[in-house]
Length: 506
Image 1 (cartoon, rainbow, N blue to C red):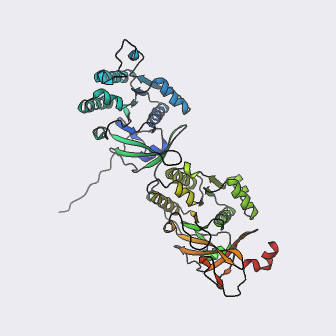
Image 2 (cartoon, rainbow, N blue to C red):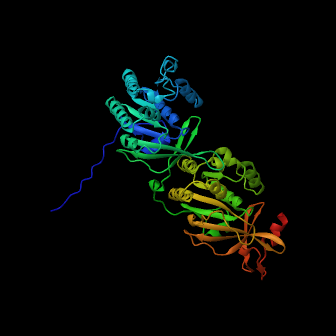
Image 3 (cartoon, one colour):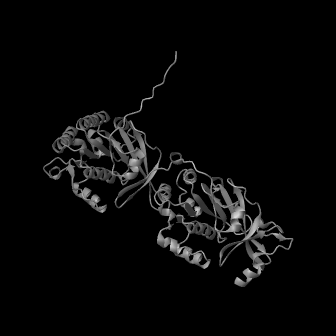
């Protein structure tokens, strides 16, 4: 007797867009219709803004929206909307606390909410819904209802009553909660069809970091984990967590030339597509200039490139590039190259990953440079699992057949040097730049320490930056101790400065 296994495919549920593109992506298309959802977060996390975006999207889709407020006035909501450049036309705002409720003759429920009859509040909500027949409702906030109820059992019953009432009238409802309860209200989590948590944290320096997490969503698949978001003019901007496994693709191994024949030979042919190469060494040794030379070679081939600049200004980079014969101004003008000077204190890991993904998928960039990892990693030191996020980003870039160049500065100039954080294991190739002393001069050396994709040259070569850009000399076979910074010279191999042509130019 054979036993067959039947796997049912769940039917596709009609969705309501949240009005936030990134959140819709996390949810796989939006919120399933006609259910009640809990949006929780501390004051200032962005709950009201999310609620307004949800209702405004409904207006765009031809749906009537209702904002029920127990804690804010209609004027305050209008002010919030205006700060984002929005109009609330088409959204009905219903205040449960009116001017009559604040008069001396009325019971002062704003001062003593426990004396207000909860049933009257619930009936007021139901009457507003019956009158307006909205398809989308935002209820702000549950903390007021919790205070009115006093009793957890009574509070739960009232929320259940509202849930059934809204469901019977085909309303998709967001209930906002500011977490004023002494502990997490898990009972409320069990009532809601889905729970979205908005969180914010403050580091020692820089703006607050905001994270979004979908704690629960019945009946649909969603992307779990923390997702960075910003609260800015125009509303919430959510950056879904990058999952490299969702972007796998097959490709053939291709080598891209670096623009310098000697450097290609050292690298074992060039920079392989679908790999990342780490340029590491002390400050001023030539890492950024070498990265620019590789980018210019890609641009000369007609490719697109994106350069993320964390350490220096765009003007400084362009002036130095022109002086070394690596002018890239024309490519900036025609859009082939984009350079983004970034303040690492203002950019979250999720936002940065989103920028890189957009450059690859929207701009079709084939070369990506991150310069440098020091400023980025140090500024993000308070973020959990940052190296895992960087690993996910590099894996994604490799799967998209991108040539990725990472720049990492080392502390010190000669002798023993160290990095702020070890990211060498993340890289497919490792190019080491060093200073060394010879003949009373401070010279530079370059070597490829590691390559997972090619049979690279294992020599140490002299390296310098001249009027023609990057120059590599012969292997330093007559030196010992170059990587220590103070080598001994035991031969007759000429240095780059000994060549007549280079000496004349200098």
